[in-house]
Length: 538
Image (cartoon, rainbow, N blue to C red):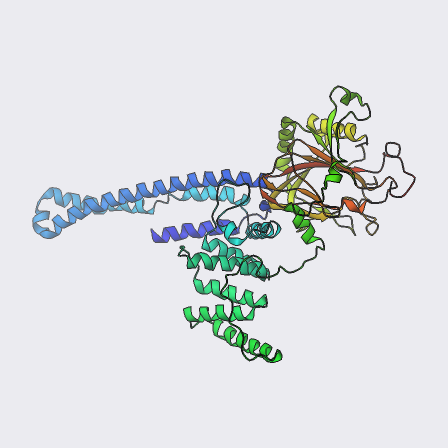
């Protein structure tokens, strides 16, 4: 039985490693399918267990019956076999019944379960998905300033249910960061694993392994005294550890050298304060406006003053007396004054949203960005979502939505890009970017032949419990998703020059599932609908 279970475990492991690289974590919409897949596998596993238990019960019944018989027969074999019936039954048992028992033991109830696993494993997330999901949690941790302890206990804003991270989960998070040379997050998560260990929580990983990763990561963060203290703790637990002794001598020698350079004889003992969010400074990265962007995502630094608010209005919008909007004009609200950003209420109905999602879901693929130099679409780590493109001819709903966008904006959609639907995954985001092409990337939309992106029309197709705002770091605006509404802004001035203030971002989704659809409207065909102004910035 033990050998059989080992083979089953091996098969399970193989299923995980043979999976298709599908970047599942980038779309919550597609991840929901995995919930039902897992439910089906659990049911299959239960059926396998029941079959094994039935088989084991039958074998036990045989064993109990034979135990009684052998005790009787071995007490006095000659007397036992003197009875002709006993002699006959012994021949029968050894010739027939033991063969039947052998066949029973050789039965493999796992066939159905393994077959089910084989069918589903092509849709399983792979190692990249697990790593991507771990990085997403770290991104959420950074953006919304959440400490590892809150995360491990599942205490997130807007959540009424908790999902716990165990010691081993925290260790795996830290190891993912460590393997990426991200020692900042490795420290945070290894420290959390150690904290939960010290609190008596059950775990599989050894404390020595946690201390090994933690001490070296702390050293990489430049905290030698604490690295020495943690390494000493590691040596005390495992004096034969292959790296600990060497690391300790190296750290102590390095610290001694630093003290000499500073003309100090004694180093103050390492602080006993636990490592927390803020103990070490997060390293700078490629994004210059990182702090402003993340602050806006948290609702900090929004420059909505009372004076600015007094300049914002709401109105009914009939698209310059468009016949389709005369009887039912759109409700238009100003979100920002300059650049002018407006929100339209009831831009999409619930039934239209569901139809769009239904059409898009089978086609969702990792969202791409246009390479500024080549104009070719490619994936990027700063955009974590899945998208699909829908043509108007595919369904009357798409045609109706395209027409509505044209009616509302007064711009032709004949030269616009297809309606893009996006669904954001775990920590899904799109870091600060421009929708239009700049002067240093003249070939970005060359293949389309329709000029630059003059305007953006963004439909929100879901509410988001926490996070997921659209923010504009340049002027400090934050616009929050509201199902059925749409926001609209111009990316270009009337002169055709880019409005660099419109650099914007989609904040990471902290809690919830974010669906949007957008229409990028291009310059060609707008010559008389939005004529040039008198200055470059009209």
